[in-house]
Figure 1 (cartoon, rainbow, N blue to C red):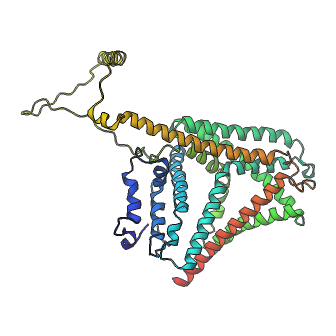
Figure 2: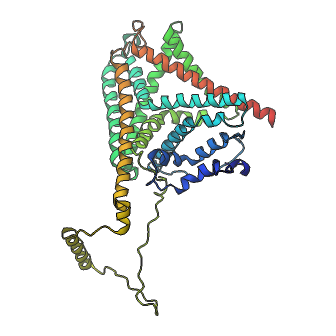
Figure 3: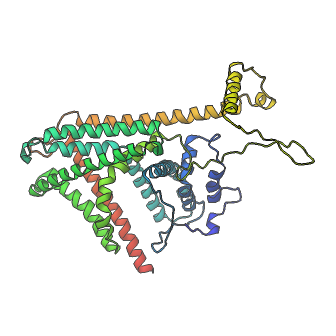
Length: 436
């Protein structure tokens, strides 16, 4: 990302894009709240927002299609999960920061029309965040509704109820297992478990896509009815718009090479990555190739100032190891309470206690956010499935069922957001054609 230096400069009071960007470089995590610590995991987003919202300025960010970037991508699933934890948490809190500081855009030097566009983008971002918050519930509801719908006699598929029973149980068990793994294990220590969960979710998604195709065929046969017409329109609007936008951009090949694998792996992106990110909200490390921590070397005391000789204790054998262990154990048992140092008396608590208090605070916020996320998603699932109308969703008798209303709203929302993205990409394409 290249920016003009004049756009990056702070004002005379030291406030501006550079100050906000480099604030993340001095955050150690101990003296900052969990919101700020996670927000600066996506420091580039903070910089971009501060550039656009700079006071009395009208700087804009432009996408350069011809730019080429190189990066060191994760080469294993555990590294990928750890990287996405930082990306997801950082982008989420950076989005909250942008929404909370939206008045800065109104105080910038942009024109009235551009301010309206920027506020509209902020509203679209807010709606997307709310929809993403209920991501695991929405995907589970789609899985249950589409698979259970095939139990309706109108489809003529017998014995599907038994298969659905095992598939629903497998989905729920995989979801619960991912939560347990995310709370208690690092991905590198449970690599095969995460791979197993990914494969199970992928197999269930293949079954879900097959059910969706069957429902779409029935929708095309009864396109004169309300829900079927909306479902068909949503499918055409979503995937048709993706394909049309790819063709207009002269880059349709990924629709044939990458789109189907993306659909099959979508529950891994949605469930495994999101669950691990929320369960490790208190982890503010970089999280890719290493943890970013620099281990301090032990100090070596000089024994002789003239010769420069030093003395270093080295454990020569098992006996020395046992002796050191017994001495340490005896020190723990017979430990005397030393008076606090002068620095500790001034501060009130020791550095270890301060670090432990910080960890407790981070863990408590993590727990509160995780509880809120899980409970709100669970409430949505229970509310939608409470009337046991999933089987009649695509039938002729469920005109006012919760599942039918839910499917109608979600499909309309997906079609609308896809249309908004298509309009934005088309505007960019036209602008690029006439300005280059």
